[in-house]
Image (cartoon, rainbow, N blue to C red; front, side, top):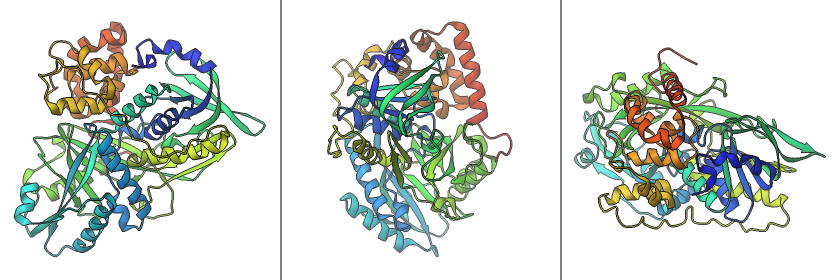
Amino acid sequence: MNTLWRRDGRAELPGLMAKEWDLLVIGGGITGAGILLEAARRGLKALLVERRDFAWGTSSRSSKLVHGGLRYLKDGHLHLTRESVRERESLLRDAPGLVEPQGFAFAHYAGQRGRRSFLAGLAIYDLLAGRRERHWLGKDAFLERAPNVAQANLAGGIVYLDAKTDDARLVLRVLGEAMAHGAAALNYVGARALIRADGRVLGAVLEDGVAGGSYELKARVTVDATGAWSGALHGKGPRLRPLRGSHLILPAWRLPLSQAVSLMHPQDGRPVFAYPWEGTTLVGTTDLDHTQPMEQEARITRAELDYLLAALQAQFPQLGIDEHDVLSTYAGVRPVIAGGQADASREGREHSVWSEDGLVAVAGGKLTTFRAIALDALKQVRAQLPAWRDELRPCRVFAPVPAPASGHARLSGAVLRRLQGRHGACAGALLAAAGEGECETIPGTETAWAELRWAARAEAVQHLDDLLLRRTRLGLQLKGGGRALLPRIRTICQPELGWNDTRWEQEERDYAALWDAHYRLPREETA
């Protein structure tokens, strides 16, 4: 375990600020984390800073899918689809328990068009992935996969395979791997301004958002990996079109699914999906221009809620799903490069990398391709570091993880696989730290109580929402954001965090206000 993620690890912050680094990465989402890992494993002295929490932005609010971009084929983006499929297969191989296969089922009704083109696209998809699968099922076989879909005029359905993840835990796993290679990563440290001299960027002025104070940190190259916030420090790069994607979380029993079910929304023909995720059912997504100030946390609107519910009611009419079934909502802003499309959903998901003396900036991209984006960014870094000559060939995403020491026979193989996937080499230490009964799963989720203790002890938790919305996802998976469990969570986590009673109680109030403002059903229409 790296000491920077201990409860007292921030005591080392002044020493870190005094060092001169090869690489300063600004932005603690999946893009920044990927760049940090690829730089550190290749011998660069690299530091990452994030002004809020790791994965606070888009990288904890995605649709949680690691997919090959099937819909991009329709728009002719073969390169992006090929790259996405390659990266999906690498993550499935290297991150079992964190990135898992997910079957998709798409109902097809009599008179509906597009079946042949869909199947042709899947044939290309299979070719790119080195697979060959059966994709068309007749009505009876399809209903075995998706028994609750509307059956009137059902002709059969199309099935295919993609993958899913816990996006915030993916970021934490990448950061942990980078730290194992000697990198450093700090949350709640923001970049206020770039340091320039003679036309070259020499680092950044950083502010400690926990203890206060500012530092001038020197770095040979600085990377802007701030995603949808890209350009705020330097005002350059491609124009971004922030697009909001909003989602619903339902109890698994209310919409039971073994496959992800995709459909074309009856209002506008956009794809909408529902799939099993972390003991719940996740429904998404919208794709709208985000006009709210970027400094504010994104939230779902009433119109988006109604839109997603209409999709569920059309696809699963017999279940009678309505807003009272929704456990939580969440919304994220995608860092999409503006391409001039009238329809926001038709904008491309490619990334762009550009540089000037001492600065590299990344914009656009998607969760699945974070490793490819990182390598592209490091090619620009390499041009500015003449003594560094790495070939930048792809490595394994993660090093193989040894099985935890014996003594955990009471845990199923699936639980151990999950813990190893999310926590990597720390899984054994997590289990060793567990108290009595803490290896049990929290009802309604797939999270063990022990994961709360470990996060509080070793994963740089600075606020209660870090713990409940990103280190674990209990704030999404449980009614009321999990507030009914706070007494037990307090017993486990307060001693690990070192918070006194006043601090804990204030954190509870702050968390309740945040959850009510951004994760519950919308109370009124917002833009």
